Image 1: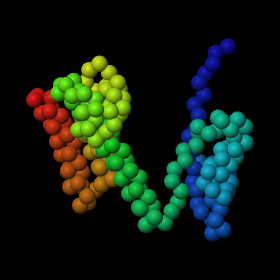
Image 2: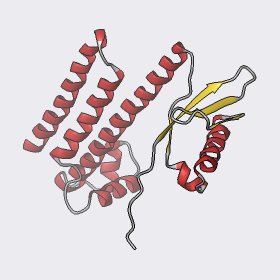
Image 3: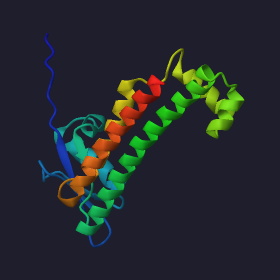
Length: 193
């Protein structure tokens, strides 16, 4: 008996807020599968159950087949939401880059400058326990390589580019690339000293 891998269909959920305050939910590919819920969470749950019934499969199997995008919103609200999501992505990329830099600075202060954990913590404005954790996470050698610095810089640049597509904003995409390049050059220069 041979097992063949069954390819599952991916369905896209569509959510619309009804004037009564209920979320109407349906699958774009199967409009016959539709439901509602008082909250988006409940509408998602009900849509999973409805698809499971339609396909005659367990709910767990239907769950992975639905792509839950953003609900339909007024244009100005959707623009605000998209901007907030993009800015959060940018902030996350910057936080990852800053975290890598703080780890590298901790290693440099303790190993290269031969400071105690407490003095390194004082210089960085951290607790000595946090510096100890960063050193442990860094392992036996340096915590950051050129590749991880470049990746962090690229993350920031890509996040900015997503946020700033086209038009006047495209100049800021060039700035994002310059920021990424600047971070990589600064890392290289710091290693050369």
